[in-house]
Each structure stands twice: as C-alpha cells, then as structure tokens.
Length: 286
Length: 263
Image (cartoon, rainbow over all chains, first blue to last red; front, top):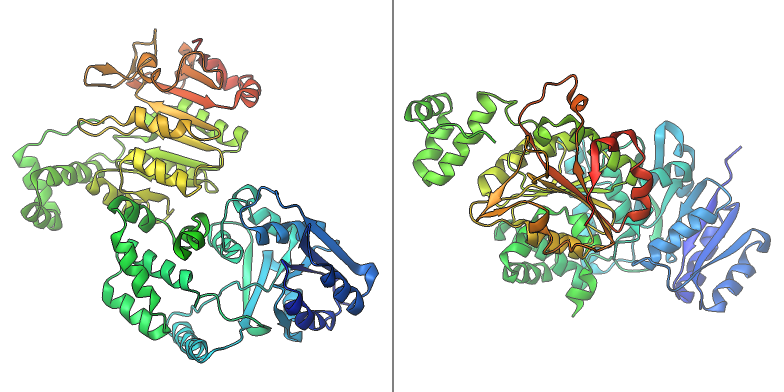
C-alpha cells in the first residue's frame, strides 16, 4: 500500500495555467491538495479546483500580504508544507503538467535520510531553448561519463519529507531571499548536514512556460557574475554562443563597470548567494 | 603575533627549502615577500605559535556558549590574517555561516587556500567596506557574532566597523586587543596615540545607550587552571539590542569571569 501524500501548489493569479495543469494533478489521486493563495486571490481558481477535485480533501491556504517574506512564492510553499496533513509532500509550480512518473519519488522519501527528491522537467520550447536543452543534455551526459557527475537541479517540482525538510532549511534565512526558492534548497543541500536529496534523471512534468534562464535580467545576471569572478572573456563568449544567450556579454560588460570593491565582494559569493540575496531582478530590469 | 627577525641567513634557508618562494621573492616587492616569509615561518618552524583567540580557553568557551545560547547564525571576523581563529570556528561550528575579511592580499590568498576545505566566505576588502556590502546582501540580518581584530599599518578601522554594526537590528561584538581596567596582565593595542579602550569606542557606542551591554573579562585566579597563566590579551564583548536574553545568559557559570561595565 502506498503512503498518503499531499500536493502543495502555490498560485499567484495564473487562472489559465491552473485550468490547464490541474487535471493532471487530480489524475495522480493525491490524498490532499493545498492551494496556497494570496488574500485577494481570483475566486475562479477555487471554483475550478472544486469542480475537478473532492471538496473535502481540498484546502485553501491564504497568505497575508505583509508576511515578512521577500519572496512570496517561498512563503506560500513553506506555509503549505506546514499546513499539510501528511509528511510526504509533492510541491509543484502552477504551470506543471504532471506525468505519472513523478510518483516514483514517493518511495524514496524518508529512506536513507532522503529529504527531497527532484526530477528533470520539460518546458515549452522555443527553437533556441530546444537547441540549448539538447546541448545541455549532451554536456551532462559527457560530464556523467567522464566525471561520474552530471547536473542535478531542483526545478519547481519535487517531493519533500517534512520532518527532514524543516531540519534542512532555516526559515529566518529563507525569509531573506529575493528570488530562487529552489536555488535556496539546492544551496542548503550543498552544505554539510545529515540529510540528503536525490535526483532522478527522468522527466516528471512539463511546464507550460518558457525557461527562466532566457529572461533578460537572468542573462545579465550571469554575465555580471562572470565578470566579478574574473572569468576570462573567451570563456564568456563561448558560453554565450553555446547557449545562445547574447545578453550574457552585455552583463559581463556591466560587471566590468562596477566599482572594484563591489566586484571583489560579489566574486567571493557563490552564484546561488548572489542570485538569492540581492534583488537582481529589480536592479537589472531597470 | 610574534614577529620573526628578518635575518638574511633565515631568508636564505627558507628560500632553499621552498624554491617557489625564491621565485616569488625575485618577482615581487619587498613588503609582499616579507609577508610570505612570515607565513612560511609560521607554518614550517612553529605552527602553533599563534593559537586561535590567543589560546584563551575562557574566550573560546564564551564564544561556544554565546553561539549556542543566542542561536548565532553568522560569524564575521575582521582581519583574517593566517586564519587561525577562523579555522577554529570552522572546525567547531559546522552549521555557522562563516565570513571574514582581510585587506592584505598575501594573507588573503594564504587563508583562502588554507581554509578551502571548510569554505568560509573570505573577502579581500577592508573591513568597513566588507561589512557594508555584507549588510546590503542581507548577510548580517540574522544574529551575527563579530570578532573585530583588523588593524593594518596606519589605518585602524575599529570605529568604522562599529558604525556599520550599529546599523544592524541586533549583534554581538567581540573587540579584540582591548584595554581592560584593573587588569594589567591583559595586553591591548594602541594606534596613533589612542588606546583601544572604553573611552575610544565611546564615540560610536555612546555611554548611556540602553541598547548596549558591554562586558569585560574579570578572570578569577583559578580560571587559568590547568593551563598556566601566560601572555593574555584583553577584549570587550558588546551585546546590541539583546538586553532580555543577556539577563538570562548572565546567570551562566562562565559569566562569573566577566563584569558588566556601568556607563
């Protein structure tokens, strides 16, 4: 008999995405669904959910506006995890169409100190992102073959085992991030600790959105960080060409214009810290 | 720290022992070579000559108790130097977020390599700048224990560091090499005719400010047991906006070795 589990979905106002994605969640028969919403959420979301799923097992978690968190999505997730009835929880983004293969993560949770199980995720591809994806997969296969180590990202859809999860994260620290709630988890699991995460190299869902990495400010952010880390220009050009990210070069140039002490400071940070603890989105979107 | 005499024979021996140092000496400035020489000597001749926190076991215990009792999240040291104290903190407090800044490039490089395994955050910056940027990057918002030990040639950044720290919501600060009244056995620093003392830091940590609690060591005679009494350095501990918790903390046994300063 399989263990009971809860599904947590943080939602801002994406009614259309929810309508498209929620049926795939219902098809997996979760024992409980928690929709984490702002106080002034669109009522249509709840109507859609009630039409598709058992009302008794559907729970609406409302998140106050002034909640002391900088990144609303992180707050919504943590609140959902706390309110869930089960310790085994699947967290997804609102735009994720789930594949049945995602249930494979359930059996690993809590075993051998596994606190989190993540998967590969398909996205809605453009021509360039498709090429990039192929290139990444090739690079990962090569890395896995040569160094026995490939990429193991956390991308929106993952299982957590709650007792371990809350030992891994530091909620006060989590409140401080501006961006990258998945990055925060990735960063925390890199640090020494008792609990570990597992990456299953299998596609578990498809996102209805395009990739984040292609966003203007994300490309600038990568380039700027490269400049602060004193990465040689030829490597940045190669990266930019291989990934079809031309704005990385602009970001690199912007990085070179920063005062020396700021460059040195950012250069001493890990990329995850730079991404999470500075409001790069606001800064670079100007 | 004890300075080794810069004698030619000693230099020659060191260069023969470390060919890379010879190459370095031929291609770098005298000041830079001198730094590297001191580092090499400290590692090869007498590795234990500069123990963490001056080898003061009471200070080490105090740091451990502060971290545990107050739930300190971050340790920030100014003046990494050879990384002795930082190494100690890395080894003993695995879960802490550890940061340090060192303005001198040679020491910075050395400490970076030495501490590569435990990966503290090291900044090759002057301490007030590093503190300002760390504050901007929200790295000091959770309770941070500062260990202020930076001094370099003519610039003594202590007051600037304290100004930056005063802007935080709360903090615990240990000011090293501090003059402790009535304890002449505890050494302290002086710069430009100013003693590192209560009257000097009063410019930033104003007397009468109720958000501050300043504590000084007041070791009893038996506090040194079983270690013999030896060259010790003074220090001050400043608790910023932690009055309530300090009241509970002051009831601990260890705190019998300290006195709260009335200002």
